[in-house]
Image 1 (cartoon, rainbow, N blue to C red):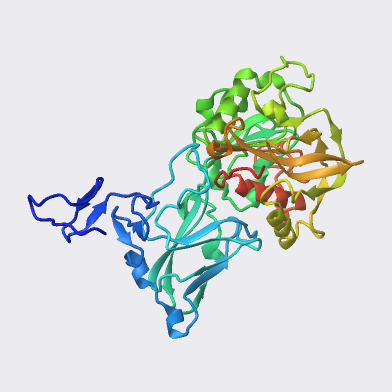
Image 2 (cartoon, rainbow, N blue to C red):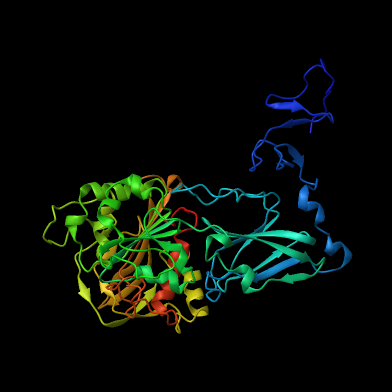
Length: 467
C-alpha cells in the first residue's frame, strides 16, 4: 500500500477514498468482497485493506504442513438432515474468521455468488454423499465451524483440531438443526390438504415436534388449514387447538413475507373459490421479492391459473407464470417409475447420484412412485428447470419442475424460487386427522427422499438458470 505521513497537518498523499493510518499506510474502509482494495489486497474483518500474505485472526493458526512434508490440517465429516441419517448435497461448510450475526427475518433476496458471512478461511460444499473435507484449516483449541444452506445454519465449536492431521466429526455435530437451540432454521408455513400430507415430511426429516405450531407461535413451522386437517391433537408439544385458515393467509403478501418458505399441500382439487386473483397476485409478489414456494399437485392453480373448470372459479390466472407450463392433462396412476432429468437442470447429475447413494433409486435416474399425478403435460425449459418426468407413451409429463422469480426479469436479477410437484409426498401419510395423526414414522419412501432433496434445496441461494 502507498506510504503516508500520519502526523497532524501533514500533506494528504493517499488517493481518494483512502486515509492515513497510524502506522503510515493508506487504507480504505472496505467491504468483505474486498473489491475496493485492488490486486494483491483484501478486506479484513475490521474494514481495512491488507496484503494477501498477511494473516488475520484464525488465519494465523494455519500451519504450513506441506512445507514440513506433512499432510494438510483438515476437518472432515458428513452433513445430514436434522434426523441425523439422511446425508445432504450442496451444503456449505466453512471455518469463519469472525462471528456471524443471525440471518434477517422474512423472505429476502438471496442470490448465489454473494460472499458467505464471517470472512471464511476454508470453505467447501458437501458432495453427493453429503461428505466434506476442509483443507488448510486452523489448528488448536476451540475452532468454529459453520454448516449452512440459506437460513439453515448450525455453528459448532470443535474442542481441538490436530495440526497436520484430519479431525473427523460425527453426525451428532454435523446434522442441520432440528430446533432453534441447535441453530437457525427457515421460517416455514405449510398449508394442509386432504389429498397430500406435506406437513408430515418435516417430522420424518427430524424436525422437533415442538417447532411445529400455530400461526403467530414461537415455532419455526406454522400449519394453516387448507382443504385438509384443521387442528392439532391434544397434548402435542407444538401447536394446540385449531389451525388458522389458509384462505386469508395467502390472500395478502404481507401475511406471506414473514416466511422464508411456503409449502402448499394438495387439496384434491384446485378449489378456486379460496384462491381469488388477489391471492394469485400476492403469491407471485411474495416469490418475486425472495420467497420460496413449493406447490403440490392441484396447487397448480398458482402457476397455471383456474383451468380446471371447477365451481367457484372466475378464470383467474397469475401474470407471467401461466406461460411456464401446459396444464391440459389430468391422470391418476397407482404406481409408476419416474425419470430424473439430468439434462434440463444444473443439479440433475448430482440429484441422480444422490438418489442412488440414499437408495431412493436402485437404477440411475429411476424413482419408483406411488400414486403419481399427471396435470402438467409440458414445461417451457427456457423458463424453468425440469427435474423429474414420467414418460407415458412418449410424452414426458413433468413430475417436478422449478423456476426462479421474477421469471420475467434477467436471470441475474431474480430472487425467489417456485417448485411444482405432481408427486405426492407418499401414499402412507394422510391429512384427515388432527395433526400429527395419519403421519407415518416409517422410513422415507423413494419419493419422500426425492422431495426431501427439494425441501432443502429450495432454501438454498438462487442461481441463474442454465438456459
